[in-house]
Image 1 (cartoon, rainbow, N blue to C red):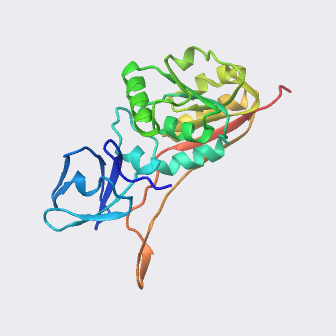
Image 2: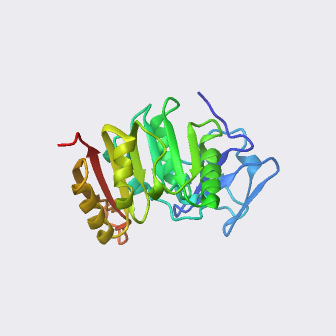
Image 3: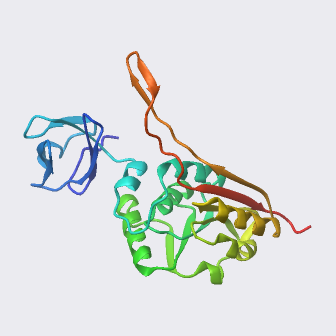
Length: 259
């Protein structure tokens, strides 16, 4: 179904050097770049994929931003989990349509938006965040991309002190000391439920794995995701000089029956 650009839409403008600019369209609006100015009117009413030129002749391609584009460009207070980890998180935690998920440490809302897209309208994401300013920013970021009608609840709450929900399908933690949540998670998850934690250092991972080994959780695994892109230009084919290397470790485990 055709969806021409309209006022209020977010548009990703990509130049010839693949630099990306996230713009919200407005009647009479303009976008200023070092390569010139683009009138929003040149985009309004057109389908995505249109190519426009700036006042200085530079070419820009206009498309709707993907969730990955939005995550990298959205306003943030806390550091976001990058797209290279967001996809594996969904797979390792097996987040499915209709799932009831607790996310603790919502930060700027990157993982929150990703989870909401995965659980769908029939699921629910409950977010715990200790800082009210982060909680407010996360909700604004999520609703700016997905709209206000999403199955999301965010509470200003310290997960280390306990989890107020039960029969959860998944628990995802972006906290500095997730081993303090293992006991709470065992009481909040349904049997077979999955706990996943995102941690920046291997020392933290070691403490978490020790706590998991002494708990009803089993099948624990820790992975690190590295992303290397390639330069492909006719006969010139080689790995890029830069890559997105270490960002964090992903540790996941399943709640098993005691004994």
